Length: 70
Ligand code: SF4
Image (cartoon, rainbow, N blue to C red):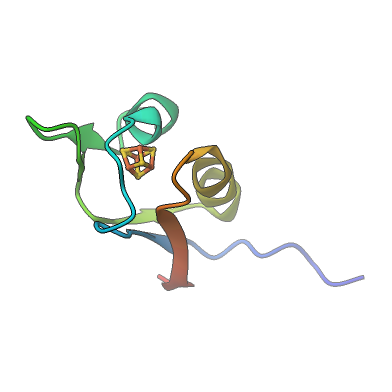
């Protein structure tokens, strides 16, 4: 069995796919804020692997993508 990844990973917002649901802001414990139109700021986050997975799976528009290791 491979050991769990512990290195931080990047989560990137696909600004074309994002439909401004705001779920990411609610789920990110302060890491994501929303602009006046409901789009996330910043568009690139560095999170633990577990935080990143939860956030990516929570986005109803599938607009959060796992990027490279930070
Ligand atoms: S949850 Fe997804 S669709 Fe909603 S604001 Fe965040 S990135 Fe955009």
